[in-house]
Image 1 (tube, one colour):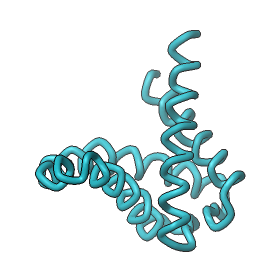
Image 2 (cartoon, one colour; image 1 turned 90 degrees about the vertical axis):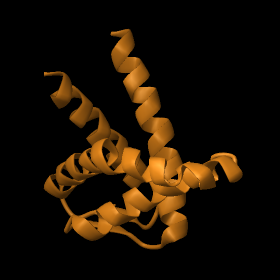
Image 3 (tube, helix red, strand yellow; image 1 turned 180 degrees about the vertical axis):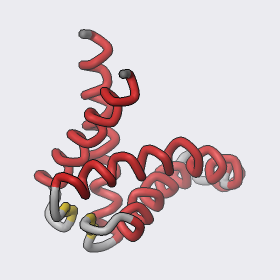
Image 4 (cartoon, one colour; image 1 turned 30 degrees about the horizontal axis):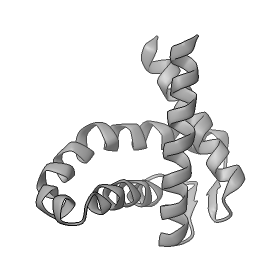
Length: 113
């Protein structure tokens, strides 16, 4: 049940980002849900590996590399999922920041319930 709630929160956060940021679009609700699943899988399995590999660069750049890993994973998700499109890297970077803040806020709300 917990995974369904997390998936719903992530999908809702992605929907909010698509509403706020031009160039961050979904063709349908099903592509939104698939994007939430794929991005969740990437964050669960690929992100830790990339963070370990990029640890020296992350230390040298005071965390900027960790932010770029998140942007990269979001952008790669747009290539993998049909019906999800991010227009350019800048849109991916802004979307990544808004997505992180939105999902953090929604997860905090869910924990307080």
